[in-house]
Length: 80
Image 1 (cartoon, one colour):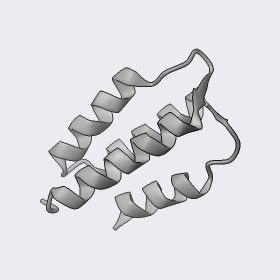
Image 2 (cartoon, one colour):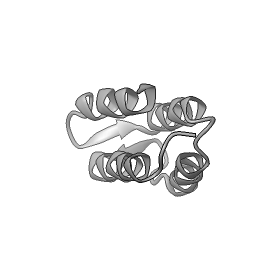
Image 3 (cartoon, helix red, strand yellow):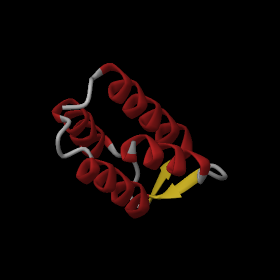
Image 4 (cartoon, one colour):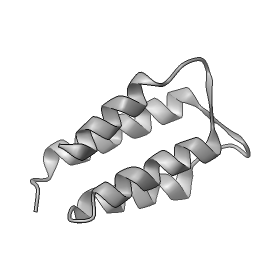
């Protein structure tokens, strides 16, 4: 599944304490595009996009939790 692969790829690329905010937003938008037929996943991504912290960087604790949240929603909602 493309969405799960993206989530795992992004999770594997978390290093250090901070990530570039633009990159985090780009990754969320990539997952949103891949989830075009999954309204619950899109809704979760929209919620996350509205809550991305920081001006230029995002704490990786938040980013990892966001990926966990996406994984949880993805697992709970069957593919359409």
